[in-house]
Image: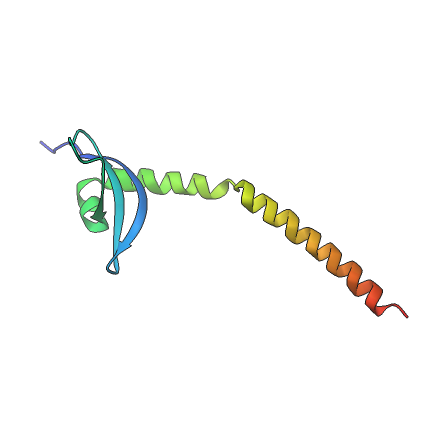
Length: 92
């Protein structure tokens, strides 16, 4: 009978000494909330958690953050300003 996966969720990816790893939170491990575990160990023990994490990251990538929205507006404003500046510089 397979054992239940001890990982509650994958929080984020990490690279430790050049090795792909995950920061994970644990189910019912007293005194240990999170730790960094090599990706290959998580993949062997809890492949479903990696799938959940990747799906969650895809959804997160699709939503632009407020900072990304502000940068886009600022960049578009700069293009407009640059076009006006160029127009006045090229006029006789």
